[in-house]
Image 1 (cartoon, one colour):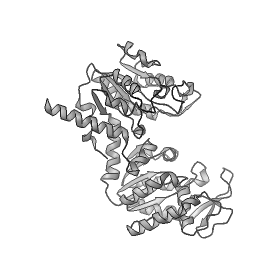
Image 2 (cartoon, helix red, strand yellow):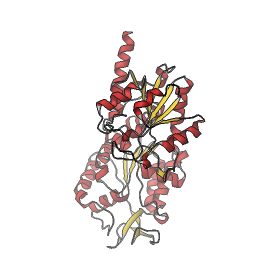
Image 3 (cartoon, one colour):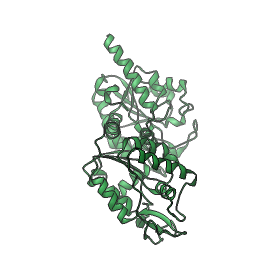
Image 4 (cartoon, helix red, strand yellow):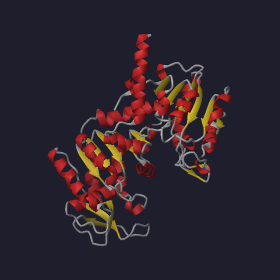
Length: 404
């Protein structure tokens, strides 16, 4: 994965008098037209202010939700975001719902365009839409790592047709943090991969195994590994069709002298609800009607010892049903151990962010990415389309600069 020297950045170019089209991540949680979390909006403010301070005009675009392409859906409109942004930045933000009329707003310093996914051709990376986006700006800035794994018009296509395409400050910061954790890590490097399904994270597990010293698995993924090793897991969530795969990963770890520590005790319940009794059980004493819903205290203690000795930690996914308090102790212990560790730590993924918020440990984690799919694909070692196109544009731009 590239470092910032592979990109053009806002510091490399003149912004004065320029129309700067910025792709941000304003995919915020909404309920009845109200924004539930302002984190992503607040994260964009330094970028917007930098452009304004340098006498540029800011034109902002983002997606919100998953509306049917080409169809207006009120619950996915960015109008509430425009109002919130005006308040946060202390300046009127002009909301433009008709993209074709953007050039009429020649005096506005800050413009927010309506949801990019209301346009036909956004998700198919349509050339005409990409050219339209390019026509309304002098400079394109991608500051939305969370959408970097998408080959969409607003994240990829537009960059082909603009004079200058650069990475925004948030993008640069994200890439630096992930590169430090994954490409240039200090060892020992420990990765924690939790969640319900091994199938969605199979490539991540194999890719991580090549890089890490220890790989901790949790949730339904851990159950699948436990069953693969012959442990009775009762009625616990498990992917039976991937038991052979789990064993293959264990064998691969052994060949590489890597460790995948599995739970020695767990917390079980008879149902997944707030009224369920939480029972601590050794791993060899699971009843046929038990559900494994968290790791046990001894396992949590073992993992804490490992994490406190780490130099780099990557965390994606909880270790249990942390939404229910009596099954949250394992994820809480793990999160607090990461926070206490002196290691450089990177955490990401929707459920992980919720756990970090619940246990109030965000201030003690080195870097928190709001990206979900992009973070996972990065960990898989995939080329992210939005990153690749920015690299291509930078190469071409640097070559032109040398000629001049």
